[in-house]
Length: 231
Image (cartoon, rainbow, N blue to C red; front, side):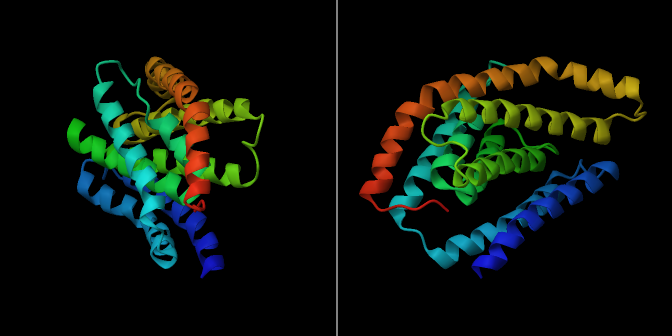
Protein backbone atom coordinates (compact mmCIF):
# COMPACT_ATOMS: atom_id res chain seq x y z
CA UNK A 1 0.00 0.00 0.00
CA UNK A 2 2.81 2.41 0.88
CA UNK A 3 4.50 1.90 -2.48
CA UNK A 4 1.17 2.20 -4.27
CA UNK A 5 0.44 5.55 -2.63
CA UNK A 6 3.87 6.91 -3.54
CA UNK A 7 3.13 6.10 -7.18
CA UNK A 8 -0.55 7.08 -7.08
CA UNK A 9 0.02 10.57 -5.70
CA UNK A 10 2.10 12.05 -8.57
CA UNK A 11 0.10 10.12 -11.17
CA UNK A 12 -3.18 11.50 -9.83
CA UNK A 13 -1.79 15.02 -9.64
CA UNK A 14 -0.62 14.83 -13.25
CA UNK A 15 -3.96 13.34 -14.36
CA UNK A 16 -5.96 16.10 -12.69
CA UNK A 17 -3.82 18.76 -14.39
CA UNK A 18 -4.39 17.13 -17.79
CA UNK A 19 -8.15 17.02 -17.20
CA UNK A 20 -8.26 20.63 -16.08
CA UNK A 21 -6.39 21.71 -19.22
CA UNK A 22 -8.76 19.72 -21.43
CA UNK A 23 -11.75 21.33 -19.71
CA UNK A 24 -10.27 24.78 -20.29
CA UNK A 25 -9.57 24.07 -23.96
CA UNK A 26 -13.10 22.74 -24.47
CA UNK A 27 -14.56 25.77 -22.63
CA UNK A 28 -16.03 23.68 -19.80
CA UNK A 29 -14.66 26.08 -17.19
CA UNK A 30 -17.99 27.89 -16.82
CA UNK A 31 -19.38 24.90 -14.95
CA UNK A 32 -17.55 25.35 -11.65
CA UNK A 33 -19.26 22.36 -10.07
CA UNK A 34 -17.97 19.90 -12.67
CA UNK A 35 -14.45 21.24 -12.37
CA UNK A 36 -14.61 21.11 -8.58
CA UNK A 37 -15.56 17.43 -8.76
CA UNK A 38 -12.62 16.79 -11.08
CA UNK A 39 -10.28 18.62 -8.72
CA UNK A 40 -11.47 16.49 -5.81
CA UNK A 41 -10.25 13.40 -7.68
CA UNK A 42 -6.77 14.32 -6.51
CA UNK A 43 -7.83 13.90 -2.88
CA UNK A 44 -8.24 10.12 -3.21
CA UNK A 45 -4.67 8.92 -2.52
CA UNK A 46 -4.25 11.48 0.25
CA UNK A 47 -7.51 10.52 1.94
CA UNK A 48 -6.58 6.83 1.72
CA UNK A 49 -3.21 7.54 3.30
CA UNK A 50 -4.74 9.44 6.21
CA UNK A 51 -7.35 6.75 6.76
CA UNK A 52 -4.73 3.98 6.75
CA UNK A 53 -2.40 5.75 9.15
CA UNK A 54 -5.17 7.13 11.40
CA UNK A 55 -3.31 10.24 12.62
CA UNK A 56 -3.82 11.35 16.21
CA UNK A 57 -5.93 14.47 16.93
CA UNK A 58 -2.74 16.22 18.07
CA UNK A 59 -1.33 15.74 14.55
CA UNK A 60 -4.42 17.07 12.80
CA UNK A 61 -5.14 20.09 15.00
CA UNK A 62 -2.12 22.24 13.96
CA UNK A 63 -3.02 21.70 10.31
CA UNK A 64 -6.64 22.69 10.97
CA UNK A 65 -5.46 25.81 12.80
CA UNK A 66 -3.08 26.78 9.98
CA UNK A 67 -5.87 26.30 7.44
CA UNK A 68 -8.19 28.51 9.48
CA UNK A 69 -5.51 31.20 9.78
CA UNK A 70 -4.88 31.08 6.02
CA UNK A 71 -8.60 31.37 5.24
CA UNK A 72 -9.15 34.27 7.64
CA UNK A 73 -5.98 35.96 6.47
CA UNK A 74 -7.00 35.74 2.83
CA UNK A 75 -10.45 37.17 3.56
CA UNK A 76 -9.11 40.00 5.72
CA UNK A 77 -6.44 40.95 3.19
CA UNK A 78 -8.89 41.08 0.27
CA UNK A 79 -8.75 44.92 0.01
CA UNK A 80 -5.08 44.61 -1.05
CA UNK A 81 -5.07 42.92 -4.49
CA UNK A 82 -3.57 39.43 -4.31
CA UNK A 83 -1.70 40.19 -1.09
CA UNK A 84 -2.49 37.33 1.27
CA UNK A 85 -0.78 34.79 3.57
CA UNK A 86 -2.07 31.60 1.93
CA UNK A 87 1.00 30.63 -0.08
CA UNK A 88 3.37 31.25 2.83
CA UNK A 89 1.27 29.10 5.17
CA UNK A 90 0.86 26.37 2.55
CA UNK A 91 4.64 26.20 2.12
CA UNK A 92 5.03 26.23 5.90
CA UNK A 93 2.58 23.34 6.30
CA UNK A 94 4.23 21.25 3.61
CA UNK A 95 7.67 21.71 5.15
CA UNK A 96 6.72 20.94 8.75
CA UNK A 97 3.87 18.44 8.31
CA UNK A 98 4.69 16.70 5.05
CA UNK A 99 3.59 16.65 1.43
CA UNK A 100 0.12 15.19 2.01
CA UNK A 101 -0.75 17.68 4.72
CA UNK A 102 0.63 20.49 2.56
CA UNK A 103 -1.53 19.43 -0.36
CA UNK A 104 -4.73 19.04 1.63
CA UNK A 105 -4.20 22.31 3.51
CA UNK A 106 -3.63 24.25 0.27
CA UNK A 107 -6.61 22.76 -1.53
CA UNK A 108 -9.02 23.14 1.39
CA UNK A 109 -7.88 26.71 2.02
CA UNK A 110 -8.80 27.63 -1.56
CA UNK A 111 -12.16 25.87 -1.29
CA UNK A 112 -13.20 27.32 2.07
CA UNK A 113 -12.01 30.87 1.36
CA UNK A 114 -13.71 30.91 -2.06
CA UNK A 115 -16.97 29.95 -0.35
CA UNK A 116 -16.69 33.31 1.41
CA UNK A 117 -15.19 35.37 -1.42
CA UNK A 118 -17.07 33.88 -4.36
CA UNK A 119 -16.74 30.62 -6.29
CA UNK A 120 -16.15 30.37 -10.01
CA UNK A 121 -14.33 28.42 -12.71
CA UNK A 122 -11.01 29.48 -11.20
CA UNK A 123 -11.62 27.47 -8.00
CA UNK A 124 -10.28 24.06 -9.13
CA UNK A 125 -7.16 25.74 -10.48
CA UNK A 126 -6.60 27.55 -7.18
CA UNK A 127 -7.14 24.31 -5.26
CA UNK A 128 -4.71 22.49 -7.52
CA UNK A 129 -2.13 25.29 -7.53
CA UNK A 130 -1.98 25.73 -3.77
CA UNK A 131 -2.23 21.98 -3.21
CA UNK A 132 0.75 21.25 -5.46
CA UNK A 133 2.66 24.11 -3.82
CA UNK A 134 2.27 22.44 -0.42
CA UNK A 135 2.94 18.98 -1.83
CA UNK A 136 6.32 19.82 -3.35
CA UNK A 137 7.32 21.85 -0.30
CA UNK A 138 6.91 18.60 1.63
CA UNK A 139 8.78 16.58 -0.98
CA UNK A 140 11.74 18.96 -0.93
CA UNK A 141 11.71 19.08 2.88
CA UNK A 142 11.91 15.28 3.00
CA UNK A 143 15.01 15.46 0.84
CA UNK A 144 16.73 17.99 3.09
CA UNK A 145 16.32 21.04 0.88
CA UNK A 146 15.19 23.19 3.82
CA UNK A 147 17.55 21.93 6.50
CA UNK A 148 19.26 23.95 9.20
CA UNK A 149 20.86 27.11 7.87
CA UNK A 150 18.92 26.92 4.61
CA UNK A 151 16.18 29.44 5.34
CA UNK A 152 17.14 31.14 2.10
CA UNK A 153 15.96 28.01 0.26
CA UNK A 154 12.52 28.35 1.86
CA UNK A 155 12.20 31.92 0.60
CA UNK A 156 13.48 30.91 -2.83
CA UNK A 157 10.89 28.15 -3.02
CA UNK A 158 8.18 30.56 -1.84
CA UNK A 159 9.10 33.01 -4.60
CA UNK A 160 9.34 30.34 -7.32
CA UNK A 161 6.14 28.52 -6.35
CA UNK A 162 4.16 31.77 -6.07
CA UNK A 163 5.40 32.83 -9.51
CA UNK A 164 4.46 29.43 -10.95
CA UNK A 165 1.01 29.67 -9.33
CA UNK A 166 0.43 33.03 -11.00
CA UNK A 167 1.73 31.76 -14.33
CA UNK A 168 -0.59 28.75 -14.15
CA UNK A 169 -3.68 30.89 -13.43
CA UNK A 170 -2.75 33.32 -16.21
CA UNK A 171 -2.31 30.43 -18.64
CA UNK A 172 -5.72 29.04 -17.65
CA UNK A 173 -7.25 32.48 -18.33
CA UNK A 174 -5.66 32.61 -21.78
CA UNK A 175 -6.77 29.10 -22.72
CA UNK A 176 -10.27 29.50 -21.38
CA UNK A 177 -11.16 33.12 -22.12
CA UNK A 178 -9.00 34.54 -24.92
CA UNK A 179 -10.90 33.80 -28.11
CA UNK A 180 -8.09 34.52 -30.56
CA UNK A 181 -4.89 33.20 -29.01
CA UNK A 182 -1.80 34.67 -30.68
CA UNK A 183 1.65 35.57 -29.33
CA UNK A 184 0.43 39.17 -29.02
CA UNK A 185 -2.79 38.41 -27.14
CA UNK A 186 -1.04 35.88 -24.89
CA UNK A 187 1.74 38.37 -24.09
CA UNK A 188 -0.87 41.02 -23.32
CA UNK A 189 -2.69 38.66 -20.95
CA UNK A 190 0.52 37.71 -19.15
CA UNK A 191 1.53 41.38 -18.93
CA UNK A 192 -1.85 42.26 -17.39
CA UNK A 193 -1.20 39.79 -14.59
CA UNK A 194 2.32 40.96 -13.71
CA UNK A 195 1.25 43.40 -11.01
CA UNK A 196 -0.99 40.83 -9.32
CA UNK A 197 1.72 38.19 -9.46
CA UNK A 198 4.32 40.53 -8.01
CA UNK A 199 1.93 41.38 -5.17
CA UNK A 200 1.47 37.65 -4.54
CA UNK A 201 5.21 37.00 -4.48
CA UNK A 202 5.88 39.92 -2.13
CA UNK A 203 3.12 38.78 0.24
CA UNK A 204 4.55 35.26 0.32
CA UNK A 205 7.99 36.59 1.25
CA UNK A 206 6.54 38.94 3.87
CA UNK A 207 4.46 36.27 5.59
CA UNK A 208 7.23 33.68 5.42
CA UNK A 209 9.48 36.25 7.12
CA UNK A 210 6.92 36.64 9.88
CA UNK A 211 6.13 32.97 10.40
CA UNK A 212 8.79 30.53 9.23
CA UNK A 213 11.45 30.98 11.92
CA UNK A 214 9.38 31.84 15.04
CA UNK A 215 6.48 29.50 14.29
CA UNK A 216 8.88 26.83 13.11
CA UNK A 217 10.55 26.66 16.53
CA UNK A 218 7.18 26.15 18.22
CA UNK A 219 6.06 23.54 15.70
CA UNK A 220 9.27 21.55 16.19
CA UNK A 221 8.69 21.50 19.96
CA UNK A 222 5.07 20.43 19.48
CA UNK A 223 6.09 17.61 17.13
CA UNK A 224 8.66 16.33 19.63
CA UNK A 225 6.28 16.63 22.58
CA UNK A 226 3.46 14.72 20.88
CA UNK A 227 5.69 12.38 18.85
CA UNK A 228 4.24 13.64 15.59
CA UNK A 229 5.46 12.51 12.18
CA UNK A 230 5.21 14.24 8.82
CA UNK A 231 2.95 12.68 6.22
